[in-house]
Image (cartoon, rainbow, N blue to C red; front, side, top):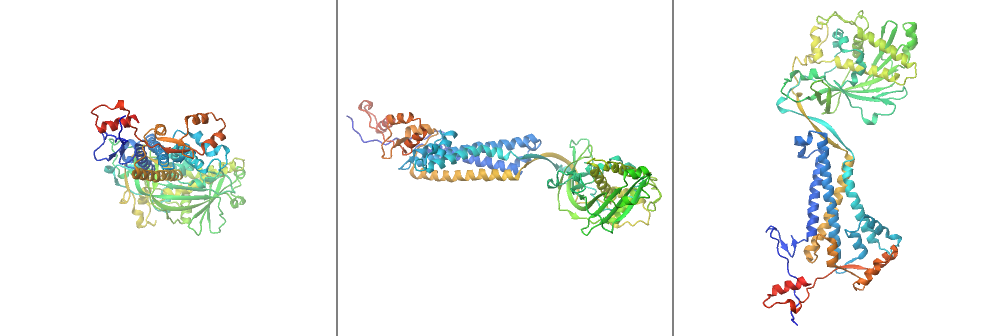
Length: 634
């Protein structure tokens, strides 16, 4: 027979498509097997999409500058979903490949790996199989070791957690419409909300019926100038719109008052060619009002005024506290006294509790977006911390005395306005009639009776602060005020005097911003980041082992690798025979099956080329051809 030394397995040829700069050795790229390269590729892609998901969720991604991304709610949510799904897909691939690399590193050791651990790491073992391996079929730790239990549980948790991460980040997602100014339309704005000026009230008497009407009770809810900022923590079951339904509870109502649209765009050149539907007022000074109803108003320093229209009477009292807040109480004459026309003579009703509220005023700067065609406030963003504002309680009551006057005999009233003429005092009589209707509801079981009274009180205070200020309205009426009225230099600010250089107005484009819940986002970052870190550490260890030994040859097909490169042995090193494998398959008792496979080991099969038969050697064959044929035969 032909005899020759046992040849070594020939090296694989370098693929023609592989770049020259990439090392290639015996089928490995960069010294690593295909499966390890696949694991690293999946890890890198998972890191990329994970970073893109987080940056897009927090709003720092450059994709937000693309019009197609921020132009609609569905587009922004879709992109976040695509990024999170891609990150989850590659993270699942990373976890799968990492377990495969760990399995092959353990199999390639001289002592191999226990068969139960091999089953726990084998990709073909499904979730149900992992559950059974983790439970051990009820066997004790001595009969079924601890390692396969933990490996099965770890792999099961990883496979279940990866898809849940995509659900986690999308579980608390909302969109918020934002507005950005169009640069070539930015102009200096006229003014914001100015300090309270009670002297304006006397000049408003000719315009009260035009400004104030039956809708005055919705003034603080009007989207033309009011923005509700009441925190969620203050929204209780016994509160409605920031006001209590019962006298024994107190509710917080917080809101912003901004200038109305017709006062904001005084310097903005409107163009028919512009398709923008939003006007943005930047760095506008606004009022921040905080109401607290059902407060104690028994202080002796409160001033009161009575208002009447025919038989209807009500009492309005205002004072201040040590914290700079305004304390107000309004008491309506009971309906039965109004019917009997006894409100003037009966004094008992004046000391009743009535409706009470406190008001704290502060100033802040905000950017406000207005609908161009109807003036509604669409959006706002506070730009500074509130600055406390000082209001004189007596001045507020004097202004209310003018606004709520029901006749023209009050000594506080001035001669008729040269332009607006004499007042009709209809608004004051309307409020008196409204107080009568509220007193009738109070005597019934209507739960909203108390709320209506508190709402009327708070709206009257808001109307007084809004219209009696040094703004465009003040500049309209103050030129006709007599010389005896004290007008300081600061009242000269307004739309027709000078602009504020730090306030701007412009047209704006709308875009949608994603608001991802911070708790869910942090949980997503922690879980995904921890998974990636563990996988990277395991891959680094596995790659170093491969680079050091260069003997493991895992392919992309784990089942084929087990069939061609592994062998199952007993503890004494004897290979499990075909007959024994058949006998294992016929064991129906799961516990008995686990007892039988527990001592088995899996080792990597060493490839040794066999000598060729004489009939396969042809005359003239070179040594390389003989070696290649021997390797193929083996």
